[in-house]
Amino acid sequence: MKNKRFARIFTALLCAVLVVMVFPITASADTGPKPSVRITFENLGEELCYGTLLSSRESTGPASAWNGNEEDARHNENPNGQYDWQNFGYDVWKAFVDYAENDDFYFLQEAWQVNITKELAWTYYPPEEFKILLYFPESGEYAVSDVYESYAFDSYFTVNMDGATLFAHYNEDLSSDERINAHKSYNYGVEIMALIARIVITIIIEMLIALLFGYREKKQLLLLVGMNSGTQIILNVLLNIIHYNSGRTAFVLCYILFEIIVVIIEAVLLLVFLNKVSVKPKKRWLMIVYVIIANVVSFWSGLCLANWLPGIF
Image (cartoon, rainbow, N blue to C red; front, side):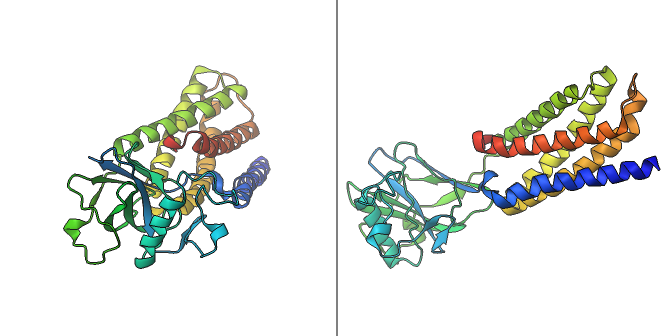
C-alpha cells in the first residue's frame, strides 16, 4: 500500500512538473537561448563601415525585407518614429536596399556599424543561409562574400579584410578571389567555460535548496553533491551537443524531457540511498518533493540566467 501511495504521489508531482515547465514555455517561448551569427573582421580599417547579412529568405524572426511602403522602412530617420532604435539612417538603409534589389538574396533591414567593434553580431534569429555585405558610406563602395550557412546554434566566422576588393555597385561577375572570404571560428574555449559555469551554478542552487529541506548531515550532503554533479554534467553536456547541432527548438524540448528524466533518476537514488547514509531518517515523500522543487527552480533559473547572462547560456 505504501509503495502504491508513493507511486501516486510521485506521478502527480511529476505531472505538476510537466505542467510548470511546458505551459509557460508555450506561452512565452522567447525566454530561452537564441541562435546567433557572429562575424569578426580582421584588418578592417577605421573608415566608417556598416555590415549586414543578406538572407536567402525574405524574413527570419522579426526581421524582414522592405515591402515597398515608406512607413515600413526600418531606419532611424523614418518620420513615424517606430525605428529610432536602429543605428543607421536613410542613406545606409537605401544603399543596402539598392544592392539587394539586384541580388537574389534579401536585405532584412538589419545592419550594424562594424569599423569600431570589428564585429557583426546578429543575435536574434539570424538568417541560416546568407551573404556578408559591407558598405562604406564615405566612398560609396561595397564588399560582399560568397554564400555561407550557420553551422551551429551560435555560429562564429572570421573575415580577413586584408586586400579585400571594394566595388561601387552590384556585380554578379565577381570571382571568388574578389569576394571577402569567411572561415568558421567557433570559440570552443568559451563554450567549455560556459558549460562549466552552468553546471556549477545549477549545483549550487540545488544544494542551497537541500539545506532548506534540512539535509545538512555530512553524508547526506556528499550524496547530494555526487548525485547532482553526475546528473547535471550529463544533462548539460547533452544539451550543449544539441544546442550546437540542432538549435533552439530542439534545445528547449530536450531540456524539458531531460529534466523530467533527471527528476525520476534523482528521486529513485534518494529513495534508495538517502536514509542509508542518514543518522536521522528522512520522510520519503519529502525526498520526492525536494527533487522536484530543486529541478524546477534550477530549470527556471537557467532560463532567467539565459536572459541576464546570455554569454554563459
